[in-house]
Amino acid sequence: ALRGTLLSNPLMLLHNASMVTTIASILQSKGVAWLAVPILSQTLPNLLQELLRYCGSIGLPAVRPEVRGLRFLWFTSFLASKLAIVPTWLRYNDVADMHQPNLFYGKLSYLVCFALDLVFMRSAVQDLPRFLRPAGKFLPAALAYKKPLQGARAAASALVAASVLGTVFGSYATGPVALVLLLLGLRSGSSRALRVAAGVLSSVVALDQLLPQPRDCLPAARFLSPIFKAVLKVFNFKIFPEGDHFLRSLPQDRHHLLATTPHGLFPWGAGALVVSCIDAGYYPNLVGSSVLGALPVAGRLLRCLGFHPANRKEILKCLKKEYPRNVTIILPGGIREMFQIREDIEISAANLHSGFAELAKEGDAMLVPAYGFGVSQLYKVARGPLAEFFQNLSRKLQVSIALFSGRWGTLLPYPYEMACAMGEPIDTRKCRDGKEAHRLYLQNLRAAFEKYKKDFGWVDRDLYFEGEVMPDPPSDPLDECTELQSSSLSKL
Image (cartoon, rainbow, N blue to C red; front, side, top):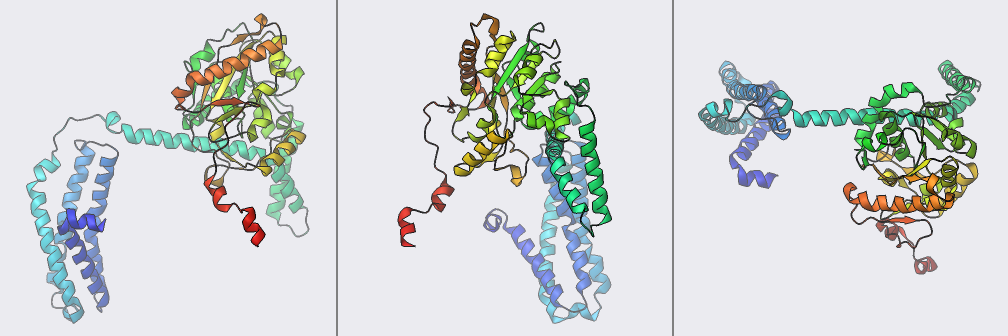
């Protein structure tokens, strides 16, 4: 930057160097430290200049009155700050401290600085009419502030998304936190505040377990749709093809089983479909692990959005509901897909489970394939032996447990775009059995992936089902740097 200033604007470099010399001379002298205040006040125009630069960076045209006003203030402050030192010098010229030897070089450097200021002011005065009345077409505020308004809306959406996601994750921790606080509060010598917090949170958990749980998606969820849609805007979520029109075009006299894959670390893809269905006029059913519905507070929130345990009885019951509750969302890949996340390819375990297709056939439902683009990129998940251990533990406990990291090391997902590719719906009444419905589901799912992956920006990314021959995963540079070779170990 210094070299660029020297080559492009040497006078400005000389001006700044003179100012530094002046301030240094004042600080080395006695009894004149007060001079630093009027000297440093000359930097006030720099603040207005930075505001003008910011206006340019956000695309605000110079013809706007606020920009012209800032230009006038900048020019006025420039003149006032540069000339303000003159009456100060005339007033205190006879003071003995103003003539001490240490100030000599400061006076010389300030004379250089003042001379350069006069040169700058001369140029500014010559260009003043063009500076204060720039040429160009006047734009209304809505167009002039389009870029900053878009940024403000994006920031507001991100804030809403962080609040909603924080509430979701916080509800998951309600039970464990209440237990820990209760144990700490029962200790002798615990503070009153701790006992009160433990009592309040424990009462919330107890009340949550005593009150009856919602059985279906509450109609009030539609009033929260703007908040949920703000979360989806952060991920730029879209549906292929035709957006929400695809959901609205589903026959209202049929039952629909939307089988979406992959699961991802957290099923945000399924959550996005729930929000889209609510916005399309449905009160959907979301089936998942029964443990989730039993969680304190979190289970109630899920049930308010239509959660049901993923068992045969509940799924068939969901497939018999009439419009607007005739859409059921399921993740056929299950927990296994949490641990099959790779950076180079997409992996689905939906081919290992055909029970959902058999249930769709039994319920005479329309089976709709859905693939979630970007779902597996929202978190970084542990790989290798640790991943295998937690995968086996999750299967035994019937709840997802994994080592992972999110944005900034938190539970918040990375800002990766998401989309859902809808495949050709399958009328299970025309299928001989569930196996044929399952085969058609896999066929249509892959076709939807290949058809819409370019629209999402995945040109060279491929989909593999479990059991298919996959390419070797790319080597991790960090693993290569930290790997201990066997030959090295033998020398230790």
